[in-house]
Amino acid sequence: MTRRREVEVGRFGLEPAPGGLRLVQSLINTSLSDHQGQPEQDLLAKPGTANEWLSRALAEWSAATGQQVAGRTVRRAELEALCAFREQLRHTLRAQAAHIEAPAPREPGTAAAFDMVVTVHPDGHLGYGTSAPGWQQVAGLATAELLLAGAAGTLPRLKTCAAPECGACFYDGSPNRIRVWHNTQMCGNLPNLRASRARRSTS
Ligand SMILES: [Zn+2]
Image (tube, rainbow, N blue to C red; front, side, top):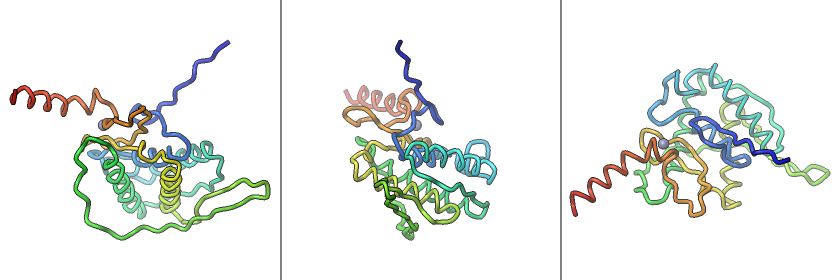
């Protein structure tokens, strides 16, 4: 008897990135670029939806990585910093999408630093996590996952949609890593249409 693989679908109809990278994806997809700060659309706009998201995202990260995590909560005063970190990630990953003009870099800000904890257990199992408090916990774990993905060579596959108003985060599993839209029908059609009109008008 064969069982069909259940395809897990996350926010915006996207499959989760593999392993712990799903935490980075989940954090970015708490909002689209144009929906920042809108309570109905941005899960980090209010402490209630932010903490619901956080406990779910940390549980999923723990299940995907086999790492332990002590769930923490974020306070209203921390949401601005977490949102700024989210947008920094969105901006950084957008530049990874090939075949598009990279957006102009933002003004250089202050580097964010997070305390990390790495552990070697007696059975040889390696653990990693962070002792950082509040919003820095999830930001520190996301940063660790980016580092690990960079070492594993999977980081270039994590992208944010090239449509400026969208910016949804997706994992490009295509052989040539050429995807630039999170959903070609939704986000790729307008620029494709403009490009084909431009080609027709110059031919
Ligand atoms: Zn998109």
